[in-house]
Length: 220
Ligand SMILES: NC(=O)c1ccc[n+]([C@@H]2O[C@H](COP(=O)([O-])OP(=O)(O)OC[C@H]3O[C@@H](n4cnc5c(N)ncnc54)[C@H](OP(=O)(O)O)[C@@H]3O)[C@@H](O)[C@H]2O)c1
Image (cartoon, rainbow, N blue to C red):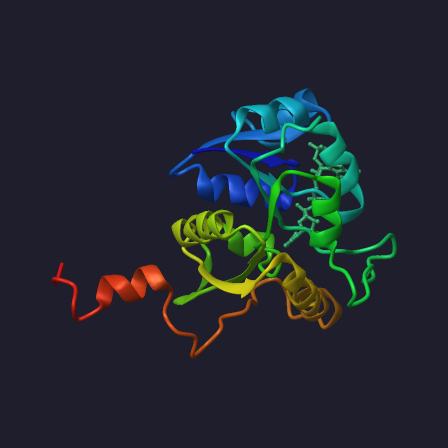
């Protein structure tokens, strides 16, 4: 799969490093030449070209820059999976939303025709590379209206060593986004640092794993 990562910051680099093991990665930047110094050796182009050339797009820009970044895609996102990793922080780094709409739903209104899936926002960039802390896989909560798109993002998360949990339609991003803010508050506000994360205990195994270990299935 060819994956476009929009942005060249901390999250973009970590996701890029992880998914490039199994996929082709292209970064979309406002200033590709400058960004090449931030990620040496990476394939970096304009936001439009990156989105156009990819099968799947990861939006890894600040929440307040999301609308502009989508505009820069010039409709190349139409029909494609668009993973929204943003945490809806305002100018003063405070919570920008109420509970009657999520950032992801707002983004889907700008990216009309894209299959928007919320994912990865509750995992600190530093931990996205390995997908785990100690021996615990990190949980990534997934929301989206297109079941096939969501299944593909869950598969991508598993390939990144994370444990995806399907929360439901995109509207459920209203619950996932505050969890991202909780992590930020604990990591930075309470100074626990970024070596923390969420591991949902007691959840049934992901279908793919459950199937693989089902007694009806022949032993591998
Ligand atoms: N950091 C984390 O641990 C973490 C974890 C989960 C989710 N998130 C979310 O992921 C997103 C990216 O976070 P990040 O930590 O990677 O941020 P970052 O290091 O500041 O990088 C953001 C990137 O977005 C691009 N961008 C496009 N428009 C921009 C604008 N108007 N202002 C600034 N940058 C702009 C920039 O790339 P170009 O200059 O190349 O265009 C920049 O490198 C945010 O929405 C954040 O809430 C962050």
